[in-house]
Length: 179
Image 1 (cartoon, rainbow, N blue to C red):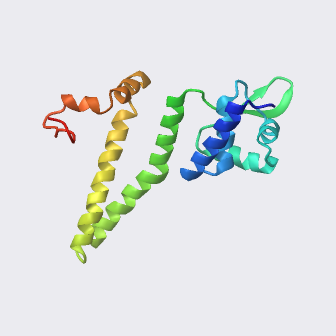
Image 2 (image 1 turned 30 degrees about the horizontal axis):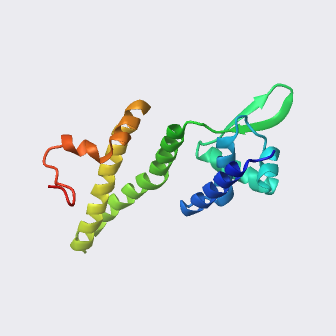
Image 3 (image 1 turned 60 degrees about the vertical axis):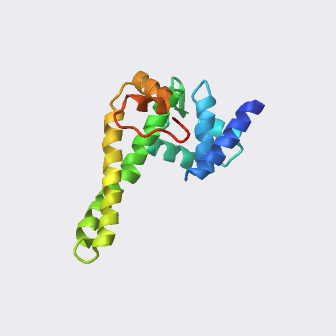
């Protein structure tokens, strides 16, 4: 498989960004290659295109499957697994956000709730700070649960509106430099 200069640059950059987001570089590169590919690819195709070991591709694919970002398909007459990912950026974004909520935010909410209760009697100032963080994450999680139910078209509109949406909210402070 020959990659264009733009495709190669995208894949390399996505690997770097993945690394900054706490994702293994090769995992991110495999995902980028599948995102750009018009057809599902075999693990061998991926290893060849990225010039990485087949074992590294296998573990990367398992990780992407655990994140629900990669699907396996089969083709008639071929015993190999073929891998693909969604080409819809909103679908990918929402999958990652859902996974992050389940893996990171929800367990943190549970721990902070327990710690706020346990610490209240002996260290009220520490308990108050933990309770503040707990309340913030609960509010964020509640917002997420409402937003995730919106249709993708509504989410796109909401995002495109940006901070302009605040003009409809009561009691908003003026932005810096605004009269």
